[in-house]
Amino acid sequence: MQEIPLAALRQDQGAVTALIANAHARAWLRECVELCQPHNVVLCGGGETERQELLAQGVQAGVFVRLHPQKLPRCYLHRSHPNDVARTESCTFICSPQQELAGPTNHWMDSATAYKKLRGLFHGCMAGRTLYVLPFVMGPPGSPLARVGIQLTDSLYVAASMGIMTRLGTAAFKQLGESNAFTRCLHSVADCNPERRYICHFPLDNAVWSFGSGYGGNALLGKKCLALRLASYLGYQEGWMAEHMLISGVQWNGEKSYVAAAFPSACGKTNFAMLVPPERYRRAGWQITTVGDDIAWLWVDKQENRLRAINPEAGYFGVLPGTNWKTNPNAMQTMAHDTIYTNVALLPDGDVWWEGKTDTPPDACLDWTGQPWTPHCGRPAAHPNSRFTAPMRNNPALDPAAEDPNGVPITAIIFGGRRATGVPLVYQSFNWMHGVYAGATLSSETTAAATGETGVVRRDPMAMLPFIGYNISEYFHHWFAMRKQMYDCPGIFHVNWFRRNEHGEFIWPGYGENLRILEWILKRCSGQAYGRETRLGWMPRLEDLNLADLNVNQQELEAALRVDPEGFKNEILTAGELFIQLAGEMPKEMIFIRELLVSRL
Ligand code: SAT
Ligand code: MN
Image (cartoon, rainbow, N blue to C red; front, side, top):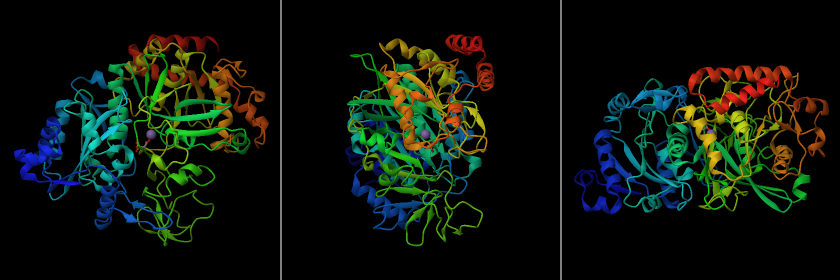
């Protein structure tokens, strides 16, 4: 951390040039300082010592609570403002001169109007506060897709979190050199007033202005704002893709394969990415390793014409409720040290707790807002969207290629939603085009990851509805167009772990057992498994799945593997809403596939 003297910054004296050699970055910083008028400016160079210093300052300032030093070494608790606990999609805008760029699924604001409004809000908003300058790289440095961003923020929590989630510090300036190609990320929590909360993206200016929230995707601007919304638009222009996908490595039968999977927020991406194989599989040498748990950047390499992927992030921002030593031991180990816990309960001894961490709740604790809590008080102890922020190098199952600038080759793409009824456990699309249709019509029940009602079924194309930074019909076109770059393409699959029986219980046990479905998927991709042709796609029969030692109701499972005609019809009909929304803009491939499906009814 280096303090930048304000006077020197204004006059651009040698001291500042030595700290920030890039003239574009320097000029932009000067502009933002004039606008926000912070009391002082601190440049974060990255590294462990600096992080500990930031955290210690946070403890002093009441931003962090230090947790039990032996049970949770170098771990901290942060409580966010109670009105600021999840992404707020209603305050998230794509800003451009024409609405056409944002398309029908994004909130849009005219750029000039947005800049005017935001300049008004940012004016003087950091008076008396520190502005942290956070240069960061998304992606392994040296990767053809790696991107530099610089976030200016008045939040210590954000500064400490960005140090975990991105490759923070001077490495970014090294990667950037003299170039102007960095994402300008301006952020202030201000007074955290939801009435004055704006997360504005300017795809044409490679900029994000975020005001009035300190939480997750609203505030850690490298994540959803840069790595998905802006990157998706960049990828569209440059011929690659930014997707809301985990990337896992699978060691099996002497082979190593990689899959990418898209599930909406809080539908188990982190759990799937860190899956521990069931005992029988472990004995047979199966192993799952994590490349990424939330975002994938995918491109087609020019030598082999195959789809490859990197994880642009350096850490995980994972959901806590339901996470425990049984459901996700790798996550538990990952967050055992050097982790920031947000909105969990604090135990009297300085340990933390959340619903589902243990079977029996603690007798007493402080809930996520800091209020005394007991098991029968009628409130949850942790917020349903409480999270851990941990560096990926803590993950005992980190894939050896997680830092490889050349990424990993992708064998299968998996789309999944959270659906109680109607959608079967797994099917394989007939081809890329049909797979794109399956992804584009993905639907899921809403979760606590975003504000609003939970449990409502909504269409969430490619699990990207809140993250496509441009016109969704162009986005679909781009998916179809990507196929033309590939010689051979990954198989595309659809899964639903969340189907329930008539008593409302999950039919499929999920978690580690999902590997049984993954085995069928990988074998399909290498021509080693049978698939039955159904109206929906290729599906396994019961005997095509390895169900040894698994305690599931065979009848229910069989039903979960069937395409029921009414459910199928209903899916096609309700997908029609998307077609109406996109009116004349829907790619013709989508229309043809839908006609084919209808003709199978
Ligand atoms: O967007 S967040 O980073 O807050 C989490 C998510 O919704 O996936
Ligand atoms: Mn996510």
